[in-house]
Length: 432
Image (cartoon, rainbow, N blue to C red; front, side):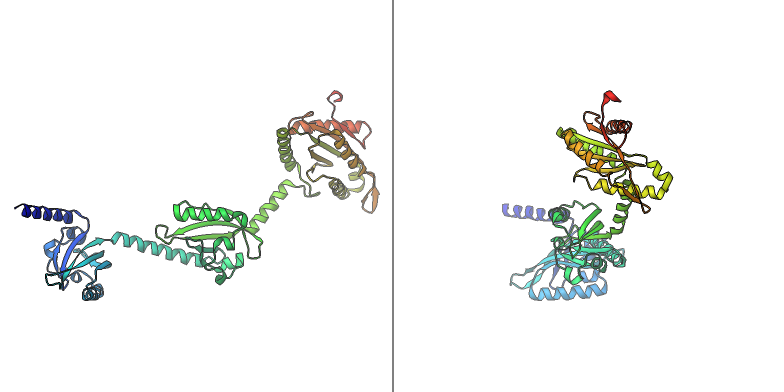
């Protein structure tokens, strides 16, 4: 009695397990005829179990699919091999298709002969639809990138080996497709300074799902020259074991050159090619911060040409412009490597001298600048003698900001003019 009770308990446990699982549990005989079908068939295929028993799985499939699967079943049963994750299309009772993944094992009678199969069917319709949608999306993406004749597109696997390389990539980076395929990203177009970061970033995206932001980069041509691009990135098959990253690079060399030219137009004087007042202001602020941080002195020399208006009035504005160009060239030749000479406006120039620890250094520079005006300038085939007055202010004594230093140097420059021109003067608050 105890054995019988234990048997019934085991049967009930098995029945509970079978009837509560989400998968369809089945048994077929040697001919593939259903001898058992769990209640889940109603949820998955719309049939009651009693409607299924006595039929074969092939009766529930479209004709072509039924032929394909019956051949596979016949081959497996002849060799008494298990059914492993066999995908097959079935027709729901209402007519729509349901994709099942079937797995089963053979069972045998007392004589050891194959008696049939027992197994489960898992509904993978939603998964297959998602996979189909993914494939279609990837197909459309590939069609799109193939149509982008002027956009460089490269595909990489999880080890950063090239899987795709279009003709625009060849034009941009210099590598032919056969050279690039199977090569690593970092060995082709990544500068040495970016190599470790790129490897880490691609690994983080491939393995951890952290996207690489789009942005402007300077990559490397086959010949070693820099290539400016705007690079964005797309990941395909990210949830699979073989994700594929696509880099979409647009050549921005011309745009970058244009921006640089615009920046130069905004920050450099077009006549003398010296920094203009805007750039001087930025550089002076930076140098003041530096001098303040390191306890250094900074000299600012305000250079104003004497009687420049006379040149313009007697020889014309073209001659005046030519004079300013020659003055800029002479003054530039006397600069230390970390000095900045700027055109402040009109006939005024500013020389910025960082690390001017001793006034004697400043005096030596001022005297060299004054000596530049001893020799005549050649204007319109004539020799013209021009002098300059120089006012000097020192940080931090004569001002702690841009306006303060400029105001003090300007006042000192006018003091130099009052003293007879053609000389220099340090700012002295007692005399202003």
